[in-house]
Image (cartoon, rainbow over all chains, first blue to last red; front, side, top):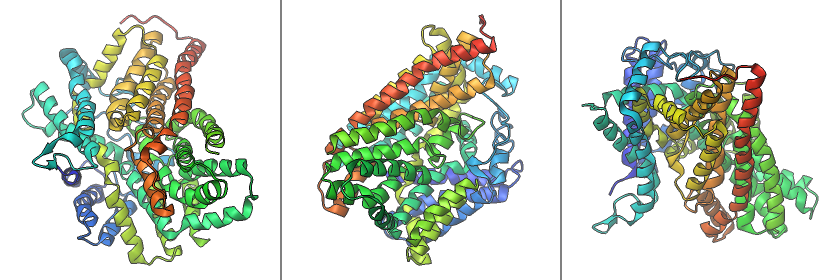
Length: 362
Length: 232
């Protein structure tokens, strides 16, 4: 049976590899601490397997995460200046260096990036080379990329039905994650055949380039999940609930609906994660006021409450993997560029959620 | 009441533009301590939370192949391809992608799109190419806006499509949370069905805005006065 843990170990190995390369890369202005960041992060993935299996104490992992966060948070993580320039293209390198090194994070002012587009600033020989390559391979270039969704979908849909010797081939409940991981690896093999490469070395070099581009933005989503768990464990929901019941007039439905929906959006904006906001706001308003006191239809109240949180997700730099990661991936100048495009959709949609809940749930 | 100070830490930390990694870590520590947890319990919660949320980071495994194919001219080919599809406008591409993303997410194919998987290698360059074909060279701020809008179609499509699918994290979180906390036995399908009205409204709003991108491009480019035939 294929276990999802294998792929987490593989990710860990990849991060450790990046860390070792970074630590030895003289072009990185902070290669020691940057290398430590990636190596430590890499070690967290296999160690987590034992935490999930309850065979290792979680606090050691907790210490490692605090160290990782402090390294990134104090500007000790830098990008390798010429990480891939020696191999071929210095297209993105250095662009984010100042931002990361300044330790100000995605909301700090970022200096002008070195490159504005795939076709605009990257060095001319690289572009010419890529143009020639595109000419040569044509639409075949899409084959490895499109293989990713096809393989992922295949595993997600058909995976649960593939049973060998009485046990399912893919670990139950993790078919999609396994599919995506397997797709990433199979797609490399397809690309190696297509480009007639003997080793995956070039793929790993390019993977390192994109990983260093993302930097700590790659870890932030997971750190936010951690925060959500701490909030729930510490009883943040109860504290808000007692405040709310003191403020809200008894028996007024619409204000309560507005409070729950807007509350979900606002808390999601603050925490960057609707999943983290949901237990808090539902414990405070959703269940005690809307369902228990006002007789709302539970699945409708909770589903639309969660979707109100998603309206908040569209508006917050805290939702790093949705709003900040693409800023890095697309080499945008403003950290708020994506959010700015989403606000005019998010606000009317939140109003729509309030109306929908008010109409259908009661 | 004191535990709410943890939320305050997040708000203030972000308002002061401190590093988010640091802000989140401090907020977690502060909230834990004020909630009566000791250092060991807080660190345990940190570790357990990280171990349980690793699937969030799994998209990393597709970065190597995307980097590799980019090296061999993926973005250039996307531009070449779209430059031949004379009928697709920038807004049309965006609206089309929104629809595809939402429909596929609704049938559980959440991971087939994404900023690393489709937006960077395909949607953003295609949209740019469509606009370039019509208007010639684009000023930088227009390029930036088109790319950001491409990212926004992915987010809106994914967020308001996925909750229709029963086996997605959000739906399972809702059912597991209220079942264990309040003793319900909600079926995921019940929750998923109630996501449909919002999904339709999201498609209407953002789809309309996507199509309007063409109009605002027209206005912007004629204002700048660079509408020109570019023969390539």
